[in-house]
Structure formats: C-alpha cells, structure tokens
Image (cartoon, rainbow, N blue to C red; front, side, top):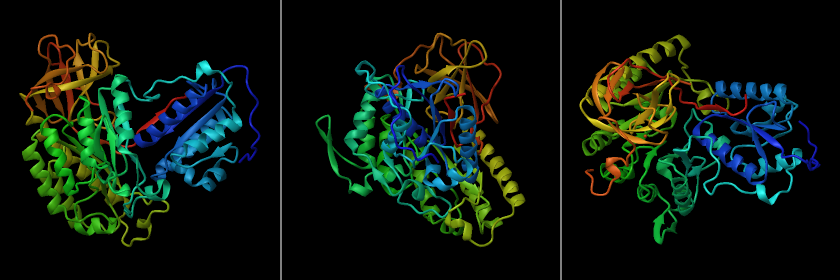
Length: 501
C-alpha cells in the first residue's frame, strides 16, 4: 500500500471522485455521508471510472461471499482507474485487502468518515472555491428523493456466534435523539415521504447512553426506541422500523401503528425458532413468548406486516430443529422472509461449533423453507382481497406506461413491488389508494379508484380512522383501469449499489 502522506497538488479544475457502495443500507448511509462531505468541499461525484480522478470503494465484510465481492470490486476499480481508496467493513481487515491488492492508496474501517476524508485530501486535494461549498441541508443521498434511510446508531452489543458485526463496527453507539429527529425533519422538508429507520439493533437504541433526554422542538425526548417513534410519528410520513428485536418494550410502539403514526411494518431478524439452535447462535431462546407477542401485535394491528431473516443449516441443527422452524413460520405467519444457508464466516465464533451440516442438507432445507414461506405468503395475500391500501410510487417500469409502487407492507429493494397500469400521470413519491381485487399464489390484482391522484395517506390525515437470498412474498399488480398480467421482481437481502460503471 502506498504510504505517501504528501498532499496532492491543487488542481485547476474540480476533481472528481467515483463511488462504489457495497453492502447493506447502513453502508449506503455511510456512503451518503461521505458524498455529502465530498461535495461540501468542492469535489464532483463521477458517474463512471473513466471520469474519476480517484475511486472510493465502500466494502462489505459480513459474509465470505460479500468479502469476495468486495475484493473483486476493488480489483475492478484498480484495473479501470488505478487510484483507489478502500473503506467499510472489510477495511477492518487491511491485511486481507493489502495482500489481494497492494496498489490501493489507503484503507479505513467502517464509519471512519474523517479518516476517509484525510485519505482523499492526501491523494486528491480540492480547489478552494467558497461557491462550491454548498450542499442541501438534508445532505446528499443515493436513494430516490421520496425515501431515505435514517441511521440511528452504530455497532451492536449482541454477540451472536455467527455474526462478526461487533468485531467490524464495535459496540452500540447511539446517536443523540435530537440529532436524529432533526435530520429526519430536514429530510421531510427536502421531499422525503418515507423514512426507513436502520441500525444493528433498533430496539436497543439509547441503552449505551442510559436513555439520555434531549430537547427537540421544545419537547424533551429520551434517547430510546419509544420516544424515537413518537418524534418520527409527528412528521406525517411513512416511518418503517428495521432491525427490531422483539423485546417487551416494543409493545409500546404497536398502538402508534394502530393510530397510523408509524407504518405497520416490523423487520425482525429472528434467525431461527429452535431453542437449541438459538442457544448455539447466542440469541434469545424464548420463542414461545415471541410467538405470543406476535399474535397479540396482530390482534392490535391486523394489517401489521412482519419481515424477517432466517438461517438454515446452522451447526448442530437437526431435522427436529428444522421442523420447529417451519412450524414457527406457519404459526407466526411471517409476511416476508429471506432465508440464508449457513456460511462459515471468517472470524465468527460459530466456525468452531461441532456438527456442521452438510451442504446438500442445507440446500434441501433451504428449498423446503422457501416452499413453506411461499404458502404462508400466498395465504396472507388472499386474505387481503377486497381491502383498499395506500401505495407509494417509486418510478417508471421498463415497460412503457407502467409505474412501480409499494404498499406499507413492502420496503424498497427487499420486498414486493406493485405495478400500476396507465399511471404515467403519477410521480415518484405520490401516494394513491388501491383496491385489491384478486390474488393467486403469487399475484395480487389491484385497481385504483377511477383516475387516482397523489394524496396524503388516509391514516396520516387529521381525523381519519386509524416495514444473498431471495425473499418470499407475493407479487403485486395494480391497475388504473383493468387487471393485467402479474409480474414479480426477485430481491436479495444484501443491497448492492455501484455508482460508477
């Protein structure tokens, strides 16, 4: 690795940085913050390798397959451009990167924004121009204008045996709640209609600061999950909670979903249901209590959608353990599920566990899991026929005249999509009502009342009656005039976005 520390010479033209962002939405937020800093200092963001003076690769290192992809992306950037700085989760293992790619200019770990900027300054000094030091108050984002990820913390206090996130990102560090709520308010002012709350453990928010109170809009809010929901719920947009663990205090947020203040969607990474497997994973093992909690949530909020992720073939998983998992899927009625075959990740404690499951057994269980989840999703879909739901428009489909949208039960990139016919008068971020007129195993047929136009969702209007494995969920079709063919877009849990190229 080049260890030169002399600043690069001042350039007469505006320098350009290319960005390759790999991994989960939390890494995407890191990339957004880096881009915001770059633009604030006068750097341009290049759309491709050839137009960049330097390329920044934000890596993922959670799974071995993700590590391989990150190393491949670094090599591609070096070959195409030659000047590469590496950051992100894999950056926590600089020896791995340096061994594979000794030509990288600098390596930093995850969420080390200052170190990233120092490296950029060293190899690509920006010209001083005060007229360029301007960025939107809400910062620059890599998502469409109408939705944004809101990261509330870094790191994690859990020590799951299969996970290396604490080794990469450290222990839980919660952002001050007034900073989070101010950022959310700025995003809404900038046109955001949907906030996606993310962290490693959203329901543990504030534990590290002992729920320290702060003031926002003249009101005191404690740095905790409930007060965060209260503050976000006052902004009048869809607010989707991701990476929530089913702790008892989550119950207090459910009434806010019933009132329409928080989107009735919970992303809960259950991972398994067998007490034996959960113990080996070093995760809470009282699944009977979890099932009771889910059933109560559904009684309180019948439209609640639950997304989750699961691992099959974990070391020591027996056929009985796997059947317990399938029974849980059926009883809990999980709406959306991603399933992974266990991967023996480098540095994970689970590598040393006994009784590793053969690959062919993992494959068989994965297929069986997906089949059961497909049946559950289909039943959930058919139960919604005849209901009217709000959908948010994401943009135009490749097929002329078709717009893509989502329901409140569908997060972007990982869940189902809705196809709207004859809807070119709608724009991204528009929210319109749609009636479900039919469904089969993988299809909803929806029709919008007459010529629908954008409106504030009924649940949010004053006085109205009260979130690398395929996900399993039904396909959606909305028609402005008539039901037409169904479509489906498969998604993976790990979001992969590349700006250059």
